[in-house]
Length: 330
Image 1 (tube, helix red, strand yellow):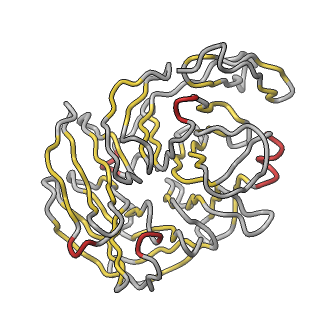
Image 2: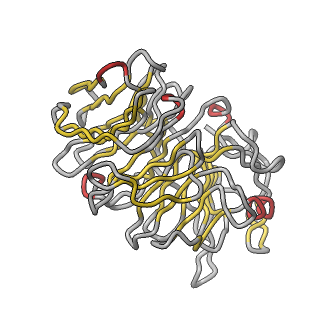
């Protein structure tokens, strides 16, 4: 937990010097209408590789629940019934999904066939989940039911170079298409229900999310000045919003590699910042950040106990939305 002794810095936001709010995570926000300062805090779920396992943290930064796991856990969700699902990968030995009930007791484990790799566990209508499975021989979107049984498998039009570095967060859209960023291509694909490519986006290496307005939000490595570590594309593939290298430098942030992200109902974007890569070389090195549409930093996690933890998956839990009904955009 962060203490006043462990962090003494202050944040310059919108030209006003604001004292940090020390509540386990550091958060602050400025009221858009009244100008009054309103602290931003979040209850959230974290997971990732080298993360120690999935955990839920309260708004004051204290652990509510955690599960010790050494597997690579790239995707995790808190569900409407209070249960948790998380993906696991053992790098070519086994991979799949673990489903826990509301008391955080294991209900079942799904293991992908043929030692396929997997890093996803998107909740689907009816209580099932989506995986993105890979071998050198191909890539598949696999849907399983609420009991952990495979009910659908779609082979994708995609050449696989490295099974472990192909997918992270794969997502089914409300329209029935499949969406995924390809890690070793830094490119995002969308396939139809039969696995045929219907369009691509020019970056995306970890997450790609379909937003309510039909736009697509990706996390990726910027190739151009206008392309961001987080980039939002419209239906025609045009960039309509991005967090660029210049934006991060202006905010004084050290951004290495952006992985998991979530678009909140208020339009803000939350994302994780892991220790690989180098989008910017210097600045404050926070593990999780929340940035507004007009590119102001309003909340971040800077807890010393997370210094060596890689948070590939974040879910903000104090916003409304049913993950099984395409209402949580992560």
